[in-house]
Length: 91
Image (cartoon, rainbow, N blue to C red; front, side, top):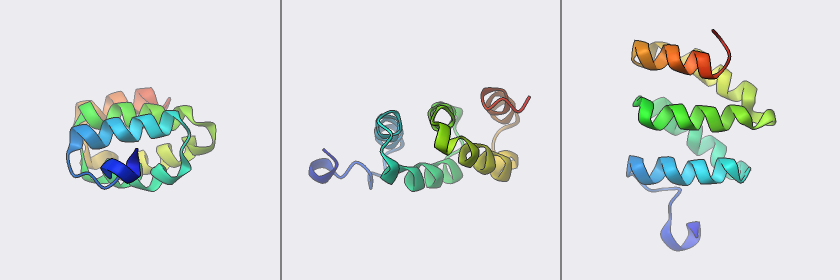
Protein backbone atom coordinates (compact mmCIF):
# COMPACT_ATOMS: atom_id res chain seq x y z
CA UNK A 1 0.00 0.00 0.00
CA UNK A 2 2.82 2.37 0.89
CA UNK A 3 4.63 1.83 -2.38
CA UNK A 4 1.46 2.63 -4.30
CA UNK A 5 0.25 5.67 -2.31
CA UNK A 6 3.51 6.81 -0.64
CA UNK A 7 1.74 7.22 2.70
CA UNK A 8 4.93 7.28 4.75
CA UNK A 9 6.12 10.43 2.98
CA UNK A 10 2.68 12.12 3.02
CA UNK A 11 2.70 15.68 4.38
CA UNK A 12 -0.98 15.71 5.39
CA UNK A 13 -1.19 15.29 9.18
CA UNK A 14 -4.49 13.41 9.09
CA UNK A 15 -3.20 10.84 6.62
CA UNK A 16 0.20 10.57 8.28
CA UNK A 17 -1.16 9.96 11.76
CA UNK A 18 -3.62 7.33 10.60
CA UNK A 19 -1.05 5.53 8.45
CA UNK A 20 1.48 5.59 11.27
CA UNK A 21 -1.08 4.19 13.72
CA UNK A 22 -1.86 1.32 11.35
CA UNK A 23 1.85 0.59 11.02
CA UNK A 24 2.43 0.76 14.78
CA UNK A 25 -0.46 -1.58 15.47
CA UNK A 26 1.03 -3.95 12.86
CA UNK A 27 4.44 -3.66 14.57
CA UNK A 28 6.05 -2.38 11.38
CA UNK A 29 9.50 -1.38 12.63
CA UNK A 30 10.27 0.81 9.60
CA UNK A 31 7.66 3.39 10.70
CA UNK A 32 9.13 4.16 14.14
CA UNK A 33 11.63 6.83 12.96
CA UNK A 34 8.83 8.50 11.00
CA UNK A 35 6.54 8.46 14.05
CA UNK A 36 9.27 9.95 16.23
CA UNK A 37 9.82 12.70 13.67
CA UNK A 38 6.11 13.43 13.55
CA UNK A 39 5.92 13.59 17.36
CA UNK A 40 8.68 16.20 17.29
CA UNK A 41 7.09 18.38 14.63
CA UNK A 42 3.40 18.05 15.50
CA UNK A 43 2.01 19.18 18.83
CA UNK A 44 -1.71 18.67 18.38
CA UNK A 45 -3.04 16.26 20.96
CA UNK A 46 -5.37 14.88 18.30
CA UNK A 47 -2.31 13.44 16.54
CA UNK A 48 0.30 12.85 19.21
CA UNK A 49 -1.79 11.22 21.92
CA UNK A 50 -2.88 8.17 19.86
CA UNK A 51 0.66 7.77 18.51
CA UNK A 52 2.22 7.87 21.97
CA UNK A 53 -0.36 5.39 23.22
CA UNK A 54 0.27 2.98 20.34
CA UNK A 55 4.04 3.32 20.60
CA UNK A 56 3.98 2.74 24.36
CA UNK A 57 1.84 -0.40 23.96
CA UNK A 58 4.63 -1.92 21.84
CA UNK A 59 6.86 -3.34 24.61
CA UNK A 60 10.12 -2.94 22.67
CA UNK A 61 9.34 0.71 21.85
CA UNK A 62 7.86 1.88 25.15
CA UNK A 63 11.13 3.33 26.44
CA UNK A 64 11.61 5.23 23.17
CA UNK A 65 8.14 6.77 23.56
CA UNK A 66 8.91 7.83 27.12
CA UNK A 67 12.31 9.21 26.16
CA UNK A 68 10.94 11.30 23.28
CA UNK A 69 8.10 12.56 25.46
CA UNK A 70 10.49 13.66 28.22
CA UNK A 71 12.69 15.39 25.64
CA UNK A 72 9.79 17.21 23.94
CA UNK A 73 7.34 17.64 26.83
CA UNK A 74 7.96 21.38 27.14
CA UNK A 75 7.05 21.86 23.47
CA UNK A 76 3.54 20.50 23.93
CA UNK A 77 0.58 22.44 25.28
CA UNK A 78 0.43 22.03 29.09
CA UNK A 79 -2.86 20.11 28.96
CA UNK A 80 -1.54 17.80 26.24
CA UNK A 81 1.69 17.25 28.18
CA UNK A 82 -0.24 16.35 31.33
CA UNK A 83 -2.53 13.90 29.54
CA UNK A 84 0.39 12.31 27.68
CA UNK A 85 2.27 11.89 30.97
CA UNK A 86 -0.76 10.08 32.40
CA UNK A 87 -1.04 7.89 29.29
CA UNK A 88 2.62 6.93 29.57
CA UNK A 89 2.32 6.18 33.27
CA UNK A 90 4.59 9.06 34.31
CA UNK A 91 2.02 10.68 36.60
